[in-house]
Length: 502
Image 1 (cartoon, helix red, strand yellow):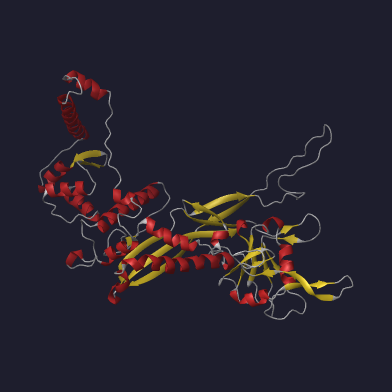
Image 2 (tube, rainbow, N blue to C red):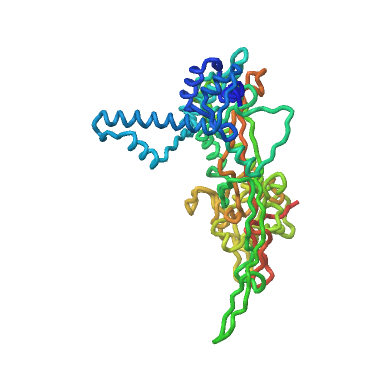
């Protein structure tokens, strides 16, 4: 390590001053929360002033012992100064040199540099998301400072603090063997405005997250949890309480009868987070309108990401996306009625779907329907039949409109709410109406939430900025297969679809 190398490190942190002026370097370090008076190089502590003095080629032989002695001398001087001030105020009796040495020996002194307050602030120091976007938009310049934030700006401080935190996390992961390094011919650094984007402070991402898991979101219905890593292997027990073989079994016993042994039947389930992304363009005019930015981004990015996640929960392939319930081995597909017209839904379909739903799932199940099914559902009822087998006009209602007889905010089928969603398939095909128990579907997301960054460089020639949103998510049905009844041949499931009617 020499002074030139040290200056290169400072420049990655945002320093743009004169490296030949030690006082200027020291002042910048203190103003930016880096109270460095010495640094560690291969286990040896070297004073910055010593490193600076060696820049002109003078040979400086710094040993660990000499550095320790210099550090102890500074500590002793500070302790004497503080004690002297306290004694001068009459708050402590005077201590001679011997007493000072005894107190030093009995005291451990540890000096720590706290976290930058900008990084600790979930808003990164910005009053609103719009102000952050404006700061990114205004980073343009000329010469070697083009597209870099001013060294003393709030954006520079946030970028520096966030970049240091990310670098520390990556270094830890590399040393722990969690990641491996690959050689790149060129790359974009996330700390440098001219190369990549600026990470958005975390609090401004929460509005996007609320849109993803909003009131009409399918993901919001599911059994949700978070991961700190990117994958999880969990052991599950997919046996039923009434199974007579496999897993833990229960027996009635007579007097002095030995208990038959049984054991757990656990299976490994592997979960690996998938990645869904949105790239949102912002015109320069929009970027200047701070009041409009926040609602615009929350609506556009949140709705798009939310739809993709919901669509995967219903129709995902389990390879590049989460595993969807339509066509899954744990989903029952109820056949159409004999002679049923194409692209129709009749009351008998609903009755059979409801009957095949696992009884404990009926309490939490929701109907997810394509909006085109609504006309079919609105005229649905079960026709009454007399004891003699004659049909009568009166019957029981299957479908009830929102705020109808039961005062529900949603339309209902068999007393359970309906969500009309574009992710459901077109009318007449499997997946146009789904009886869905979200508590039987596990959704895992990254604990850190949405990764968000902003850049003015992607479409610079078109005067358009970009916001990028990355969301890590995985989803699978809890039950891998359908469930056999204790009595009879009926099978049940937490997810039920209606077969194609063509």
